[in-house]
Amino acid sequence: MEYTLIKMKVLDPVPKVLEPFEKKSIFLVAATLRPETMYGQTNCWLRPDMDYIVFETNSGEIFVCTYRAALNMSFQKMTADVGKVAVLAKIKGEQILGAALHSPLSSYSPIYALPMLTIKEDKGTGIVTSVPSDSPDDYAALRDLKNKAALREKYGIKDEMVLPFEPVPIVEVPELGNLSAVYACDRFKIQSQNDKDKLLEAKELVYLKGFYDGILLVGPHQGKKVQDVKKVIQKEMIQASQAVVYMEPEKTIISRSG
Ligand code: ZZB
Image 1: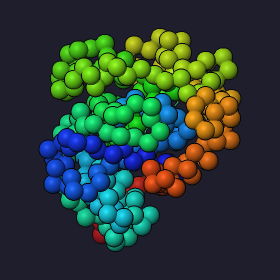
Image 2: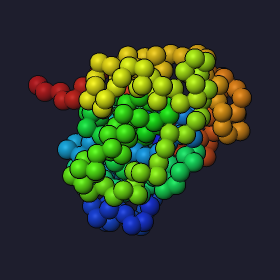
Image 3: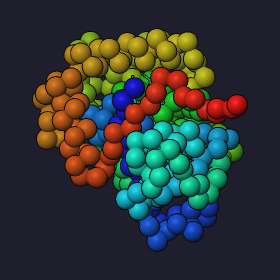
Image 4: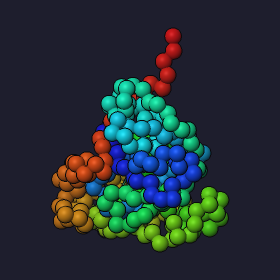
């Protein structure tokens, strides 16, 4: 599986656990299949109880993601030694919640690292970039945080990290409109980020139609079909050092013994 790794730069004030690395550029790195939707990012998602690591890439940048993802990156020659990751720190998601970030192409800056409880450990980097206009999971989770002050309080998230951020119309999809995830969440009557089955249906609808029929509404490629510009936008971001290609084997070998 080929993902685009989006480099979300950690801004001042850096979270305490990342202070030892602040002389270098620090990035939370998110794996996405939809680089053309980066114009619509409103926040970053982390799982509060998940383990992440800090490591240095061979270009001298500091990355934060799961160990599993870092190991995959090391096999892609992104660390000093192929197949080896020198772990600089082990952290929990909750320790970097609320971090201010600058993410490429987003119309909002800064955006903030917010909690999502459904992030999977065995996919991508464990850090997810949020595009509530086009991803039903993201819209449902952002709406949860907006509607539930208690949820924000529980994780120490300030109102200004959540309330000003609205889905941005970035892709027009015939029949679904220009906020296709919002449309799909309404149509399937999704109540929260935990509505797993309905969210899966919503995601399938939006993915397929968005990919085959979607027209980009913003940026230098506006007016073009999503399927024609996806690769072009990925390449542009890579050339600008805003992203890298990240490959993931279908099944990861976690450990090998005897
Ligand atoms: C931005 C984005 C914009 C995404 C969109 C989707 C959509 P898949 O098909 O299941 O592999 N993601 C990445 N890692 C994780 C994780 N560990 N746990 C939960 N979600 C994760 O899905 C890949 C997508 O799931 C990625 O692409 C990422 O969100 C999220 F408009 O990045 B995406 C209709 C989907 N639209």
